[in-house]
Amino acid sequence: MKVNKTRDMTPFDMKKRPCRQSPLLMPIVWGASFLLTRPFGLKIDRSGIKGLKPPFLVISTHQGFTDYYIAPLSVFPYRASYVSDMEGFAAFGDTLYRKIGCIGKRRFVTDMTVLNNIKYALRKNKDIVFIFPEARHSNVGITSMLPDNMGRLAKFLKVPVVTLTVHGSYLISPFWDEEHTRKAPARAEIKLLYTAEELKEIPEEEIQKRLEKELQYDEYKWQYDNKIKISFKNRAEGLSNALYHCIKCGSEFTMKGNGSTIFCEKCGKSWEMSEYGQLIDQKNGEAIHIPHWYEMQREQVRKELMADYRQEFSVTVQALPNEKGFVNMGEGRLRHSKEGFTLEFGGERLFFPTRTLPSVQTEYNYKGHGKCIVLSTRDCCYYVYCRSTCFNPTKLQFAAEELYLVR
Image 1 (cartoon, rainbow, N blue to C red):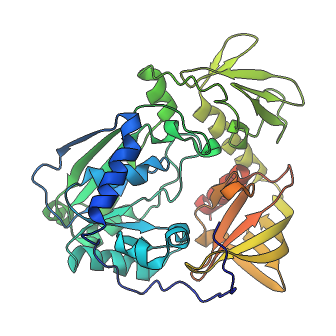
Image 2: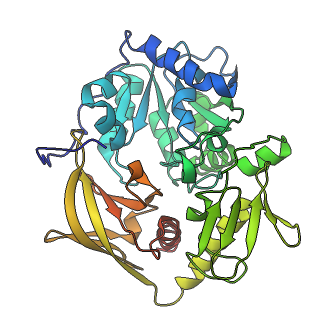
């Protein structure tokens, strides 16, 4: 993790215009992407964009790290720009990250300067622009909450709209255990959804619905249907970060993983994660679909929100204001209620209203520092860590999303 040694809190320059990908770096990007995806036998169906030339907008699914390598290969030999969060700029530096085509953005923050930079890359640079509307890696291999303005964005930009859908990226590196890579095939399809002329005639609501449909995926269903065998022996370790609620006894934060098994420490109930991605009840042999378990937890949170919902934790805070790295902000308090998140540290008090926060970035072991959520303003990202067993990023994410929907 890059540390901002000078504690410079100057906000990242979002207004700086995006530059075109450096011709010197493009072969390196393509070569590295090819080598990094070769172990997974990547196959990309490009027939859907045959004859299409830049500029155009690519709206992509976002399952995991492998997506970053698939995207450049999907539009080869053209150069592209990529809307990216602040972590990449901190990791690679402002100059290099811009030269490989990245446009800065803070997750789940509305900022017109980002939209202006996308428009600039399309209209002035005449390039392809990739956006990843899920804004984070998939927790359990299904589509994360999508923003409700994709149709409006497509009509505003007035360029062809293309979708990139990926399979295998999550299975290769599930979000709850990104430290260990599994061997699974990677497949992708890139296709034209609307021409610029078609966008003029179609209502944004219809465009939105079609985009939402195109971006849906369920990796465990895809794995099972295609009989993709993952024999990694510790394949269930870490899964309890996403499946934190025991569906047998109803206890929270008592789930643990050991090897290929996930179990409840309170009631002792256990499930074996099969090589084909199902959870098998070790007593009766019944199979459970992991995304179904995940969504049952969301329903439980929805019920809690109908009462006097409130969570509060002692936390440590790190700030990421710019590309210079992270600044330790010390100890603090995090509160979440129906009104929103309140974060206090070092004499500061920040409030993130429910109506402006469609979701939160969740991390299960960020850079080896443990579980956290990320709350962002236009000027800074705040990484909020907590070691309490009652602090679960997935549950806070569910609560934020459900509160936003009923705002």
